[in-house]
Amino acid sequence: MTPLDASRKDVLTASDAALAMVLALRADEENATALALWIEVTGTFANAYTYDIYFQSLGDALDDDWHGEQGGLALVVPAGSVDKVRGSVLDVNPDSDEGGMFIENPNRPPRPPASSPVMTGPPVDLSGDVAQRVLQVLEQQINPSIAAHGGRADLVAVEGEVAYLRLSGGCAGCGMAAVTLSQGIEVALRESVEEITRIIDVTDHASGTNPYYEAAKK
Image 1 (cartoon, helix red, strand yellow):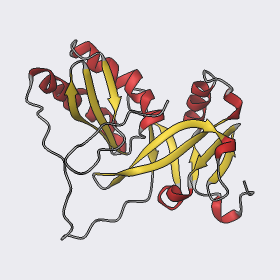
Image 2 (cartoon, rainbow, N blue to C red; image 1 turned 180 degrees about the horizontal axis):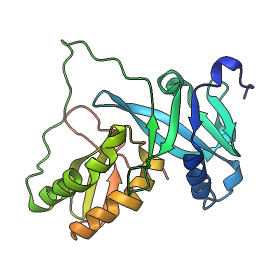
Image 3 (tube, rainbow, N blue to C red; image 1 turned 135 degrees about the horizontal axis):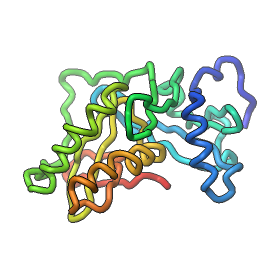
Image 4 (cartoon, rainbow, N blue to C red; image 1 turned 90 degrees about the vertical axis):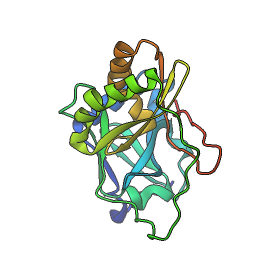
């Protein structure tokens, strides 16, 4: 890895509150001090980027990846995400009871040309009783809390006891979104919809005829 130059220092910072939360989470990981917090753009949703945020060894970073250090925490942004993340701040939502994190990103994905077709998979049936009750909890309890920072949680599907959610907008996805899921959304859903015992954060929804769900990195 090459040393940071001045032009690369403004890619990503973390607030004191977010730094404290991430360090506390990292402390529970094996070989914690060798782990960096990786933030990677995985796609777009509702005119905002979606993210995969996870712990991984700092030694895995390549020369073209951005990497920095703040308060004892190494931060890594893969090369392909650097320009999309530049100037972002990882923070904790002070207006939410969920204790979740979000990424305040000044960048927005380019809008597709008006003539571009929108690829979608077959519609998912959300008309069932369980799905409708999950939707009610999201719209009445969860989304009003995370909307303050442009965040939103959408129900993608319900399969048995599992609800698949997509976090978008200002909410961080995957690794750190697990904080929001476990401490807020999952608690609210499991209390209100007893049939749901597990929540999975959907990081990518493939285009085409066979959409799939990809669980968050651990």
